[in-house]
Image (cartoon, rainbow, N blue to C red):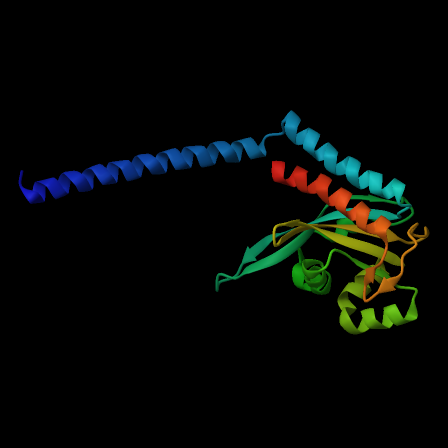
Length: 215
């Protein structure tokens, strides 16, 4: 067989395989996309895990507000830079106060950069805004975050991340306004030394991480 003919046959065969493989890939991608868009019993059950976990935190730890925030991609700039965003996924709040979720959809991560940077490198972050020394340090390091918390009348808070290996994907926020946090904690450099807090965080992270890995 002429070598040119052989090359043409091999090229044609490879081209056919490539087209066939792409069709299979596109079919599977579309099938998965449709599946993810459907509301199924499993997806409802998984949502219930999130709701029950966040609601449970609210009641058990005497909070005025608890929310779950999601980090995600936003717009892509003309230079192909992906602007990172955050949105509140679920929230339960004391009826006396406004919902933080109403003004925290597609918020630029840069507006919460101190929180995100801290949570990437620490198991949690906590502040008492009625402590003058804490307030001053907060003011010096994270003015924008402080203004947001003041707007929502927050006096104390505890935030901790839900990580996928080294990727920050979610964080849980606990706010106290009228109520007092029930923990006997001692604040040191925005962290607390409290076994009860540490155990609570591990328990909640485990519940939510299993849920998010299933979805």
